[in-house]
Image (cartoon, rainbow, N blue to C red; front, side):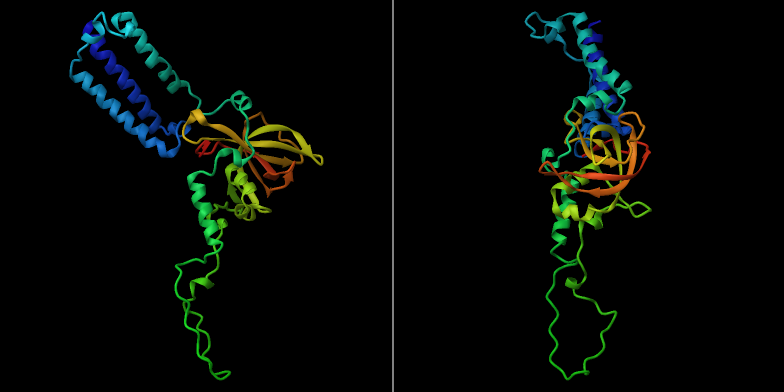
Amino acid sequence: MNSFFARWLPCVTLATWSGVLLFYHQSDRMRDLLAPQFRVFALIAGVVLALMALVFALFKADASCCSANDCGHGLSRLNAGKLLTFAVLIFPLTLAAKFNPGEYSVNAVKNATVSTDASSLGGASKARQAKLDAAREADVIAKGKISEPPPLPLPVAPGSQPPEDANAKKHPADAGTQTFADYLQRSSDGNIIAEVLDLLYAAQDQVLRKDFEGKKVELVVQYMPESSGTGGAKRFKGVRMFMTCCAADARPIATMIEADKLPDFPEMTWVKITGTATFPVEKGRRISVLKAEKIEKSKPPEDNMLY
């Protein structure tokens, strides 16, 4: 019996934790729990736990510490306590792995504060910040490497210069400029495929705003009704969950959607919206409002979370 508690219970505990971590990683459910930069560490932890379980299986552990009267782990001196500890470590984990829906419920989103302001997010994600920095730089620097300008031609008599060679290589300064729009993905109809984060940051940043404002945009969001309206038009929130590092800090963010008529969908239904991006100033603050032309049900995106 002592062999079971000293050797096999720790082995099963470690193996279960390893199995759950590896299962989440293999099934892509880790996307709902961790931001991309942290997932490799969860994979490493799963492998390390599997190796530790193997060590317990192959080598008998010394349980003399927890059988001594002066052991500080009170539960470990009793077999029932060891089983209770095992259950606490394993039972919630296995239930979560089996029944976790992978999405936040309607009540969970309702009870949280839905942010419609990018300034509350603490800055752009690394990927979007890199694109934004490149766009800002490209607004003042032409494509290509900066090189010395070509030498100025000497004055010659009118009409004696050779015709311009159409195939001649132009100086980089004549190559045109690159904007954030060059980084945007587009649909087959030419519409910009955007995320809620893109529109929220565009409301705060002039460089982004000029590439979205007045353009046709496609957006996949979850539907959340909003009571306010403007000029007879109806508004609702297009919601996505934003994660900084893990599911514990995930929070709902939203852009306002304006339509002539509210869709007849249950709350938090995934919808694809095609419309025109606008950024009006309301109550002293610039916000993002997508004026919808088409609203239809949609499948959830590959990643439920935004990072």
